[in-house]
Image (cartoon, rainbow, N blue to C red; front, side):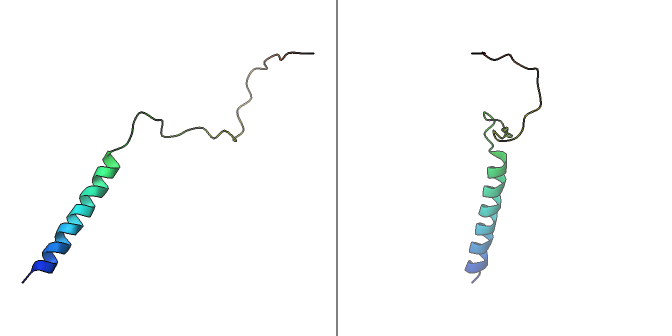
Length: 52
């Protein structure tokens, strides 16, 4: 009987579908790239600080 190839085929298709769904299901409410807080920032205009 061909029970074992049928089970392997169903499992293969199920894993393939899960991979495709996990690629499609992306949360778009959060930005994909978040800036690194430790990275050096570009020099901007000098902001005057409080001098004591």
